[in-house]
Length: 321
Ligand SMILES: Cc1cc2nc3c(=O)[nH]c(=O)nc-3n(C[C@H](O)[C@H](O)[C@H](O)COP(=O)(O)OP(=O)(O)OC[C@H]3O[C@@H](n4cnc5c(N)ncnc54)[C@H](O)[C@@H]3O)c2cc1C
Image (tube, rainbow, N blue to C red; front, top):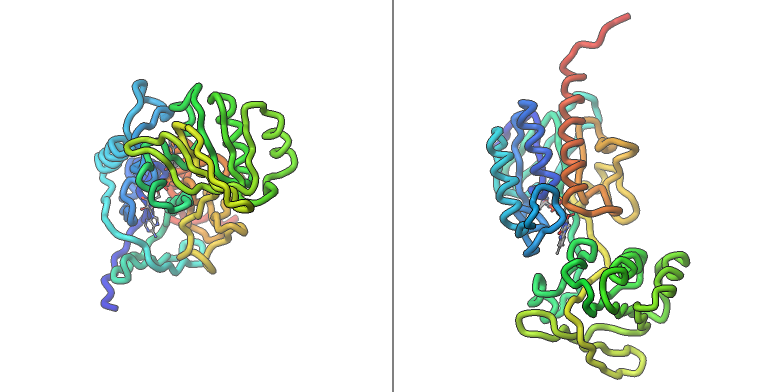
């Protein structure tokens, strides 16, 4: 490996709403941030056509355009945005220590502070018709896209708490929600199961799997299969929601930073601090609860402020009493 070493004040990993907001704040605080975009420049919102709930866009905006605008805003204040992926990290344990981050296995960045905004990836069933219709009625976010199916018939797949919560959310807006659970029971908590069962417009189907999402350009229906009897059935729907979980992009931080059992970075209390001084985390990578662009942006702002305050503390000699 041929190594090129560069020293920076603030390194930002990830170019979703959290990363760009951190960049805007860090650049305006003169931290001269360098951002590496990762394999999905712009993050998850580049996979959606319409963002209707980010404040400041009264007519809504398409995801890719919104992310280009966030990039332009970050660059306006001097953020250097680079294409590249963090492939290894060696974080210091010391206050004021230098953190080493390897980019694309070839460049080593030595950073005084690191802001991790590497997000999370929604899991899909990965059947071809589902992949083809992503953005055409297939979505992994009911809170984001449910509104577009107001008064219509939709389906959701998943049996955990998130699926149950999203099914209840959809039931409030949609005409009918068919909920498909692969097993003959739900993993969701008893309270969530009770909520689902109490909603008359949720049609709960156990032992049910998706055989095919139907439709050419947009979702028109779902062919489902009963995994006990093999019986197939087609149901007409316009929206199909996948709620089978998310995977936080934290593989490279294993053994370096504290994570919960599902791999989300832990940032205790009301801060973005991780378990290493000078390393901060913002956005979906540390939030499995809300997972929205605006909440990611909010914690991106917090991470930059936390980094700025951390640097101020280590740069100011402590008073000896
Ligand atoms: C289909 C869909 C529709 C959605 N619609 C909405 C909506 O309408 N409104 C809303 O508020 N929210 C919506 N969301 C949720 C929203 O997209 C996320 O909450 C938000 O994007 C999270 O932002 P983030 O910055 O934390 O991470 P992400 O957007 O996930 O971005 C992560 C970034 O990290 C980078 N990265 C990953 N690994 C590395 C690495 N090793 N090195 C460097 N970079 C790395 C990636 O390339 C990417 O740029 C939607 C999500 C989906 C999937």
